[in-house]
Image (cartoon, rainbow, N blue to C red; front, top):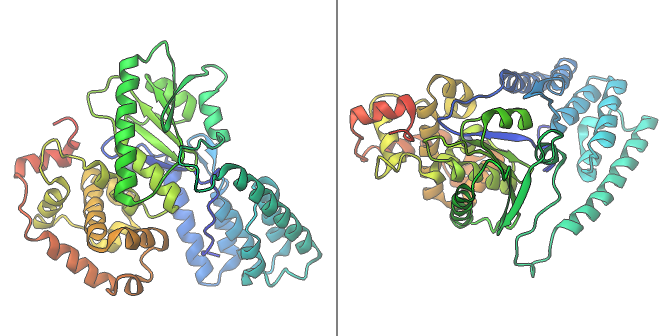
Amino acid sequence: MKHVRFFYISIMVLLAHTAFAQQNLDANYYKKVAYQKQADSLYKAGAFAKAASFYTKINQLIIDGQTVKSVNAHYNAACAWSLAGNADSAFRQLDILVHQYQFYAIKHINTDRDFDNIRDDRRWQTIIDKVRANASLNQIRMRRHTPDSTYNMTIFHPLTDKVKDIIANDSLPLASVNLEKFRLFFRVDSIDVKTVNNVSEELSLAFNRINEVFELGYKRGVNVVLFHSLREMKAATGHSAYGGFALAGHDCLVLYVGGQKTALPIAHELTHLMLLQSWGSTSRMLNEGAAVYLQNECSNVLANPINTIAASMLERGEFVSLESLLTRFDQHARDAEVRTYFQSASFFKYFFERFGPNAMRALWKEGFSDLEGLIGMDASTLEKDWRAYLEPIPNGDDALIQKIFQCGCQTL
Ligand SMILES: [Zn+2]
């Protein structure tokens, strides 16, 4: 059940917000995280009916004006209801999955022991038939959109409903231009050619760098929606992030180009998009760590920003434990956003450069549960090693570091 790891590209809505722009997450985002945790621990404790009701609650939340649509939450609710002996409720969840979400993971559902209680129910075969039908439809869909290896060009996949809603919204449909790997959507009456050129140049550089550094071989086209006004951004997307955000699972970045003085977080957001879509979902710590690392934020004021800032934090006793950073990222970020992002970036940099892209990819996907098997080190040895690696690095100037912690680097 927790092992569900389907990549539902149209549903995996993972908003990835810019560092140092105020986090700006809907309060219900934190509720979702809390429900998930609560449900998982109830499930582990064998309190299946209670677990099921928490999984169900996840999909009743409204985040950024839209109902949460978590396949995993429906699936896990179905598992928990089955284990609790409540077949009707389990089938209600399964019905939603197969009809509204075109659930297609046939092998997974067929072998999941959580459903042993309901496999003999007459409704089970109907569900399985539908999953099988969905699976063959999905195969056809994938074949249509996945080119063979001789295609050495950028492939634009069909727009998701969410992206269609943004660019073709009733009141303000947007025009678009195609530039290499990107399709840029914007109002031609309010965004000038120079801005479009600058953005596309930066996008191109970042795209190549991300592909190279993380060895992704990424070929999907990226839709980029530009807004010149936060009000319009909010009206069209439900958010008004000062900078921008990535819509992972939707091949889409949204950027605010309204003449703010700070640099656009293009590499940061594009890292979120390309990594989440290549490697799947992950912890907030690694997700934000990767983005800050790749953008090399604060390189405008420091030569070796991530290590220097992290070494200064360590020296000042401002490091939180690796476990706490991993499991309570959002709480830490609310208290000390810049520190939290940089400590995460420091861990990412250390791990990535020490163990390489394959190990990082595994850590990203599988988490920390089999660290020994992955790198031959347990978590506490790893943490010590990370700290030891930072120790010889010279600290930054105290006043400068202090300023960075207050407001980030973009305005310095
Ligand atoms: Zn981010």
